[in-house]
Image (cartoon, rainbow, N blue to C red; front, side):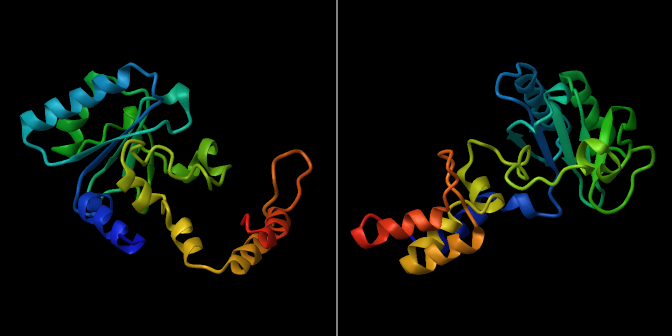
Length: 205
């Protein structure tokens, strides 16, 4: 199976991540937070009871432990809303008030993301907590289920670099590393491309 087939399989099984008509509930928390599992149970119980169609995604930590568990609700046609310090009780209320109704519970919200505004809820770009940083390596924190390889492949472009490298010539990869300016972390900070080039003639690359 090649990478294109692997990606297609992941998309077929987890395509809801990009389905604009799908309600998605992300529960982001550190692994040792005992409340997160109870929140997931509360959401599932209420969703099943009220017959709401929604996907629940248990994600890793968002990176803000004092605000966790953080819940993000993506509702079709509305900006996504992030809620902080959620409890099982407030989780149950959000299903009734926001998923079934039109009350986004602004008093529980941290911010909204995406285009559009929700009254009484700040957009994420207005919060110094978020707008003073540009996440690169951590951009998927809180959005990928660490137990799902499909999420890694679809959202994090997992293994795409490896697939590209396996189809490239050795010299092309070294030139790519040169252009990137990647350095080692052994203290000297030597360029990775130079080290790989030294190894290449010996068949170690």
